Length: 89
Image 1 (cartoon, one colour):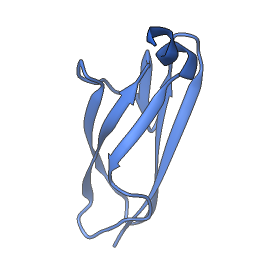
Image 2 (image 1 turned 60 degrees about the horizontal axis):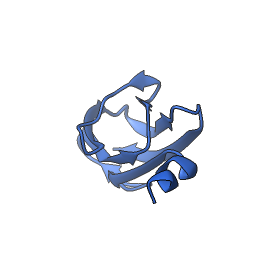
Image 3 (image 1 turned 135 degrees about the vertical axis):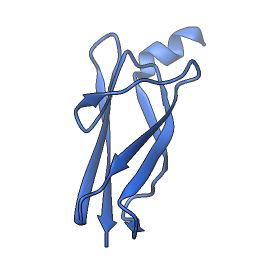
């Protein structure tokens, strides 16, 4: 069972915001958790998690359509990516 995590590779779970969500305030928090990672990026900028793999990061949205990309790599250089499309009115 211990080898299972290494075999499956990195995993990203974004709890908030949901894809396609509309906001009336430009400030938004993206939060979730990751598993089996060594590097973690939000829109190309490295961010960090706590010991359990949880993350919470604040972003400012531009007016209109926004794309948020969260990317994780494991120590074997396997990569996964999650994209959220948000609208700021």
